[in-house]
Image (cartoon, rainbow over all chains, first blue to last red; front, side):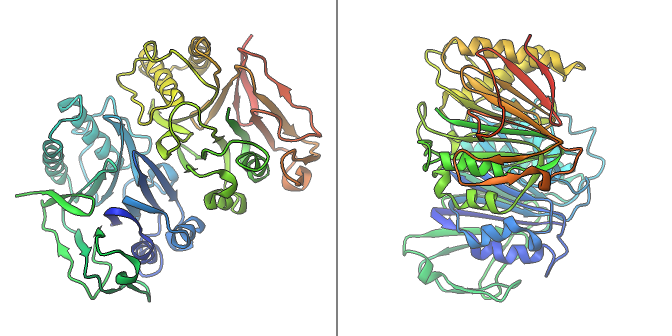
Length: 259
Length: 259
């Protein structure tokens, strides 16, 4: 199993607090020692930092903790390998271009007996994980159904949810997917989220001895949603998603969800 | 104009010395203040660090200088914007997937009157630079001509050179292109390269007060080629490329070149 983390915000926000908790799970409080990665969007552009080393030992992870990159859309992953060896090309997040935007994806879980069903011609994996193949297959199906970006983007996310329902038949498929504007999260068994807005309070990390007083870090108009495999704080009320549920967030707010 | 830098080596080598010289051109000794980026390959995977801020002020550039990431294949770019505004999605290097590998590209120069000729359907730009469009067009033409990776990869690079000849009709087109294994450089007006091998000597950066004694940094079997817009050192003999010339390097050695 791996740890997923995403943030959707209405103003550029740093993810240092949540990432600090996540990084601890990469070798200190958790067994996720096979690499990590994080993607920050800035406008239509994005930057990905990744490392095949455990996040708790990574100098680049230390940079991310020390140097707050502000973004409205962030996706992150800490890996415990099950399918595919430990190397950079198998390290999440994965990114491909669709409809003139960078789409970024992370997956938690394990699929079996899927190769025959997930044939890809246009979106080809570089590594050999089930995760990247499933992502390429989703991108390929999306492009086949919508050669151009649909005016009603909700229909595209509903279609991704249907594809994820199929993927879930092959095993555990928790995933997050973003084009920089929207973040979709699909739950197979473990995903939780929380939206923070005024009045802000204090939050206590579960995995590190760290408290943040968001009231001092934010303005009254800020809306920030954090999505994670498991709740990262123990003094706040997280929404625990159910198997098959999905949500789409935009600028910190819930934009669409499963019925 | 922008500054390009690439390195091809037969053993994982750090690029700290050359990158230090390049970074100075981003706002100190040169006018290239509109962002920078660098891609390191590790196996089939790659990592790109980029920033829309001047490289001489960038905290991430400081990380690259301080933390030697070793790689056999590196491509880097410092930007002075001419086409396309200063933002992350317009910052080089650009990367796309072809034949199951990440292809990374940087361009120096400026094209005019090219849009009609460079129509892309499958490889679509995200930003709005002439550089990224030219890259997408090269990828698209390559995929059309070779739906699968050709057994003789030289023929693919010869075809890229033909495409670059066409692009050069629209203006200045110095570029470097890599799949992580090979690095191709195509010269429109400014590109130089040097291959360092035993016996190694000392090198003095032009743009910063820094000398490296490669004899202390290398083993006798190391072969390292550096390609740059202009020579980075003033006490070594660089090969200055001519307009229309191209080279392909692999593991530090010249693999193919124009006749």
